[in-house]
Length: 349
Image 1 (tube, rainbow, N blue to C red):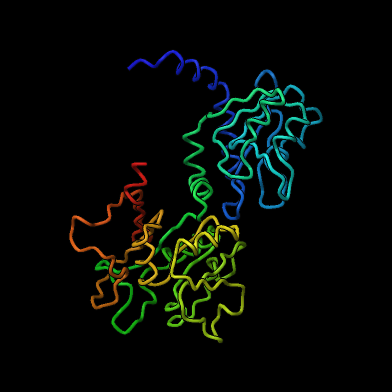
Image 2: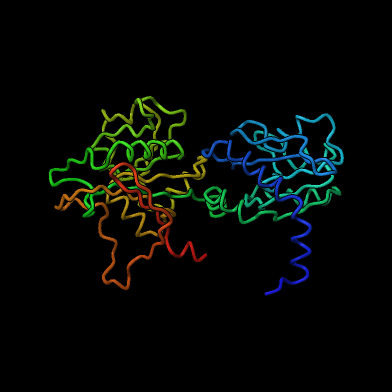
């Protein structure tokens, strides 16, 4: 099918910026994945298309990508800023990037994805009203994929939820006596620690805390604490025991039965990535509520049998009611396998 004339015109107008946008996306990936702020990269182009400066956001309280790039040129008048996300338009710990670009005299701003934040959006309109040429939507699909977790969380006001469990090949998370260390091997367990470190919060049920007394830390190969530690969140009505390891650090006790309410509260605390790890009761509750964005299932080549299943009753009475998933990855980890899946409805959307 031949593209419509206006589609060709849009493609021709944005093509010169695609290389710069890909570089900006690579810069963005250097920033932290945790915290309330997105990963953003920016490059400044001369009138002839050469990159004269670049920047990225290094975390909350640090200069945003645009300001970081602007700080590396003496005179930005007439330059083009290529940014992975629409420049923000609000005062937070730092000032609005849209204002910084206007004051610097940038002639054009090219960006990939609109900022969905209620307070931070509107930068493009502000720039246009100030006479800056604005080109949106360059490599939008690639930027959407790169920022999926942050964008999803920001658009709906609840964190991106990753549900993880480890099980034997026959779906058991523990032996009949309750022992579960270790179902999976070293490589799988280390990857879990890395995933914890890439999450803002780690959620477990009170049953897991009472039975296992976990520390819920993220550790390296040698057992050292990794640079970023997720906030432990204990979901359930029973109190955390006085002598629990979690009481040695900051944690949140979420006593509400409404999991969506729990997630909204966590979003208000700056949580954008929630890692649900503890217990079949909590896992099944998140699945029943339709709140899981991503499933990570570690499968060990073992048969255990018995009643200790990885996921409890989901309220499904017939096969027609089964929850459809789409596999997005299969990875070998030593003798184990990691299966990644998402709800099929999210793929359709």
